[in-house]
Image (cartoon, rainbow, N blue to C red; front, side):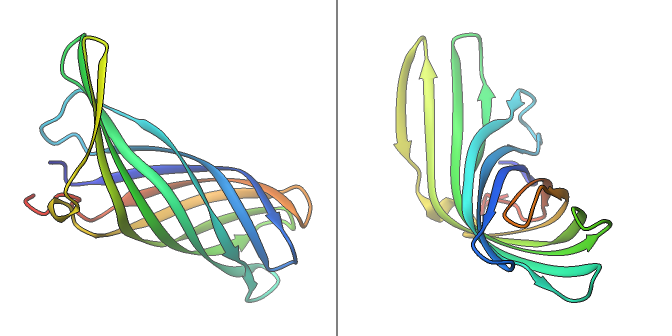
Length: 174
């Protein structure tokens, strides 16, 4: 299987109930490194969860999150046959944020992922079948590093984009 898991999370909204706690939801555009699979394409999924933003100073803060994230990849075998790998994770990013302005910030930090579901959807000549995959074939833990930026429209609503590069081989057999 592939060795590197790459995900891009785009958060379309962030709503906070206080200055330091909130919810977030958005879209993931993820793929798996192309070792041996040249026709790999990105898969779109969603993410949702909660966060806590703890200011360390006027310019720096730390933001741990707990997110449900749909990730995976698509592979086209021919014009009539394709497969989609669907991996669902509980992810725990811990982002260190630099507030360049009161609204705009840059962030970086580790992300830890715990596999909760693995499925595959195959489509051949218009016929589709979804199967549950044995989670024992996949590493149950994934680690990566994230880089991102964000803009807070006010203290309750913001938008951010984040790129997460995974370091863990998702397949136990390599």
